[in-house]
Length: 386
Image (tube, rainbow, N blue to C red; front, side, top):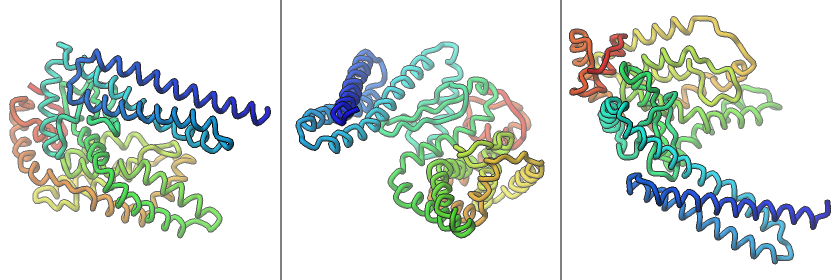
């Protein structure tokens, strides 16, 4: 293929992608015009969509100019390299619209009326404890607990399995998902301070404990996993521990330990490392009356941790990333950046709810839900909401 033919194909790709972007933008705009979604949220999506449209038109103008330049390859490559970012932003907007439509349908579904009412109350209480704006959190029914931060979009879909609607102990997992929102809304602080410090700690330590020939690659790989995947998870675990205390740690003990990571690279830290961090964060709170629960959780963790584990290539490779020096320093850095301690105010209410639940054996929907659900976990029982 001649350079002329190659350049023509190159230009054809750019032309197709720019036209594809504008077509998708036009389609989403038409969908938004017919939408009955809240105006405040719609405005945020429309504004972001308009920005993407303007940037796409600007790229198209640059593309038309670049075609007339004698040395156009460099300019064309710059334009082509910038298009995936625009596509990713448009994808998030389209996802946001889909989530909003689903949320709207679920809110109107008469079969979900009772669940929506109770979940709205729980969301309001938890957002208050987490210092989050309730208007930015959209709880939706899905197959698992998760949260999808959408960057430019002013809300966060949070997903809850429908099977937990009558016995809500697992709802405390939402504190971890809200931790991701808290992390996402503090991007400047996280990217400017926390992540560079984590990166430095991991790279320095790995370089010390592996051979010279492997140090560069291993340290960069470990730092990437810690910065990209592990730090948000550890941050959210610490956040949830400082919101709900022993209740979150107890549930994590049950939920995580049966799910050891065997793939590499992992999307989440190993469960044992996460639970160990939660216990450390819990102990560092030094709240009166909590020592008994910490001792019990620590012993439960030890018992499960004594069970033999199947070693894999992935688990062996992860050992170096879990060096004790790395864990201690990174845990300390993460704790320093989680600036919330709602459990200090909530703890007395949890203890009172525990006494009442022991007698009444049910969660009262007319009283605060968070203390009652936390108390149910400490009692190691599941109570219905009435």
